[in-house]
Image (cartoon, rainbow, N blue to C red):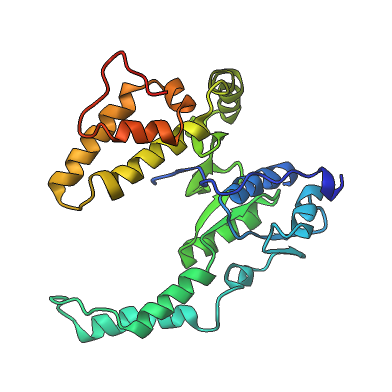
Length: 275
């Protein structure tokens, strides 16, 4: 398969996950999910890598592709030296100076900068898609020590989150989950029920229209941050959204929305549809 044949997952979406409260194709599937959320992805793998993942790297879609055996130090590969020590010292200093914890000291500008640097360079989540369960457990243990959320493929008990079957239509995203019990059923629900019924709607237009209406209402028609004003906007927005059908919102444009906004705080009559 060549680079010209690869169609990357559409970006600017959300990473749809189900959070727990208590390789090859699988790895590619995980990467596709992450790419849709504009994630910075580093892949550490041996020589047996899915060819599409290699092409993703060549296309510049991955932060890095490291072809060697995994090292525990990889979990901190982007962190400046001693950054975690500096983070812990911030907490240690606070409790040393404030044994009774009656007052909370504010962070200094330098301390805030250190935390921001740390948050920007550390891994937010780690996913393993390997056949070596003992190595996965070792990675899981280290992630727990480092405070990193982790997902071990096909090991729900060792996952802070799991992936569901996602339907996407423009900015509309729906995740279907059976809480890890039957991923295949989720896929069938998406393909047999959601797609046939949802593809007839242009949700991109509907969402764009309602986003425009909401922004215009907040900034031009009825601005202000007083709780009373906010409540009035929310109540009108809720009622006008329900006044028209989903199909109506898919067919309207900004000129039509402007006509609706001119009626504020009133509503159209029942038999009126703005063209």
